[in-house]
Length: 106
Image 1 (spheres, rainbow, N blue to C red):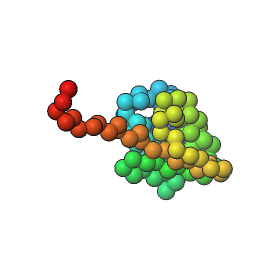
Image 2 (image 1 turned 30 degrees about the vertical axis):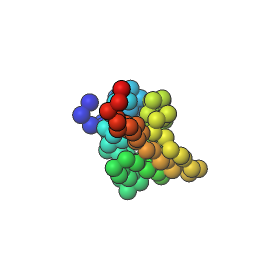
Image 3 (image 1 turned 90 degrees about the horizontal axis):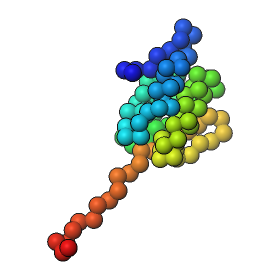
């Protein structure tokens, strides 16, 4: 799927929601970009280098996108940071593990 699709009323299609639910954990950044592209009220979807902040604004289409993210268990376990009452969510890309430099002994 190239980008999110919407029905005639502007709600995300089942195809879009399925893509979010089934998105590979190998491309969390791509999933964040996809969700931000599907978000109604673009000012309520902020994506920085490693974080995404979403506010549903009470719109049921955005709530559906959050529900699809929750069903993507790997994304939710790895990226969900916190949420607040009123539909405010924060996500963070997992940090790459630090690799200790070898001292040449082995």
